[in-house]
Image (cartoon, rainbow over all chains, first blue to last red; front, side, top):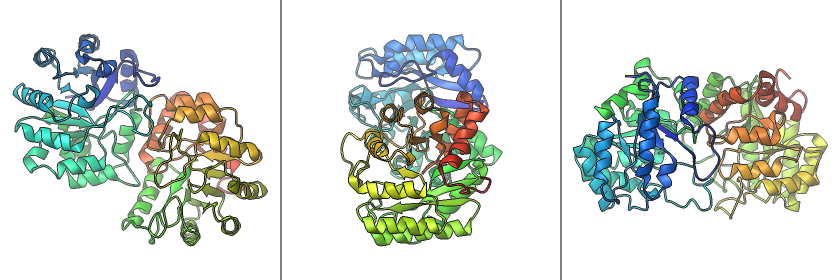
Length: 260
Length: 266
């Protein structure tokens, strides 16, 4: 297992503003710069397409061109389109560690019948399902970028909808995480992992609080790069008093649990 | 040397039971990051007895007193902005004089009155007289009014800066919410507006845009409510700036715009 896995990275242009460093080469350089061994990558423009799965072939190709486990593809699934099950089959064949679906960007009910069907299929295929709460701060989004943020209630509903499904939720803040975690049974909560990219450090110390109240084992390293600079998630960890074991759990050990 | 030009502290007369822990956390994290001086403000009672962004004169005074006490407690590490509510002109001017005479080094304007309002002129005139900078809370491209504050945006700050060309204004927290590109376009050619890099936003491309807009000589480092994002920006700036330019952002620009002797090594 690599020493540091970024479960929350993207490749490709963002439709709502100019973002530097979106090419595979640029992302690889950012990983070198920040000491991240592996990035789980999603095709960013595809998230906004009517059929987001059309970006997956390029994603697999881009991942395949990198040496070793530098990039791991996280393809997008649209459970409202016919043949969507095939994406899961492809993902398994390609060694994808997870699949993702951001229902509100696709115009789907976040815990509606399509999402529940996808949740069940991911559980059956032993593939974690990744969802982002948001991609950008709501106060700065483009006036025409109007998709809603993922509601905490949807995460609670999805984790309850199948007793085997594992969810990876990115870009969640403290309030969101607490609402879902303490609104779930211990068994449900054990099947949800949270990336740290949107959780505040000092002086509010939201991340330190969550590690104490919810547990180190629920958190994984994620950056949201290149939409966000990856140095931020590293700085969050550098500002905590973690044991080497705890830091290793967040940077890679908990991911191993997620995909096991 | 590293100067945080946008810090806050809490005090007992606020809604926060954990006020002491948050203050300690800021100082502890600051030591780890390498912050030499926290230039801070306290916005009244932080909502306990008057609204955060519309603090009563009594709360303004109490907040400034609490900050002065912290400054005395940490004479090397903490400096204060005098926070005022421009709707109370007489109180605001008296509070500025009182705070500066007690060792504070700047003025904090939050969101009690729009930046281009004439009521801000008596405050800016005092800033010119005392040669101190004004930190103005900004909503980057305010498209509407937001509950709880009469926020200003960069265009309105530019109007005020144009009326008071001898005063340095600090556009607060470029990463603190809203369309930062709108602000950066607005202030590009306004030489007496500096950009404070604080805020929770760490958008890819934001720091490049800051450098392109105002250059290293008009950027100031700060953290506001999220010191992790501040530290991340500091690290990323190493990619964009020379060592000398980094020094400008880290402390030299601040040392230039605050009064002589404001900082220990100044």
